[in-house]
Image (cartoon, rainbow, N blue to C red; front, side, top):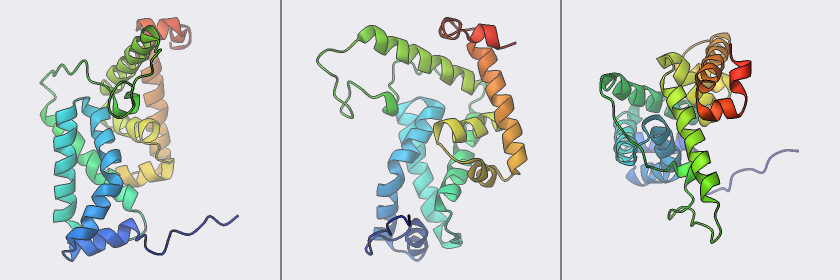
Length: 209
């Protein structure tokens, strides 16, 4: 079955960025409205700090607008967006690599129950909630310890949901190279998580060798 076409008044992301490159601020505002949530979440998952994520999201859109006139539309705006965003975030990570920042206590926007994004239920299992946070913390710490290129591939695949082909385009490598990075990343993650209480509880220590 052919998917329904976009409404006639909905312009493509490519078209919006091209118009922004010609100085159309309204078009760029529409582009921001469409993607600011995804951009913020991507930054948060890497840094786990609300202010850092907000600052980097803002820096990303400033950079996107500044270079909009150079954009060559090819129907792959999302790939282009993640390429620019990933490079920006990991450039910042490299500059911070000797600084250890404690960013505990902040909630992932995806796990936002109890905030304005998702009000808490009257009867919530706080023990289960805390265990979910502990598990998420363990995964984040394991991902953060991965080699940079491996981490990029894992973040884009497992957290952002990009296809192998899209990841290859974002990271400028072949599909086979992406598969190798992801295979290595998953093995390293399993090994790291096997050393955590959460990982041992789920039996990862028996499978990661």
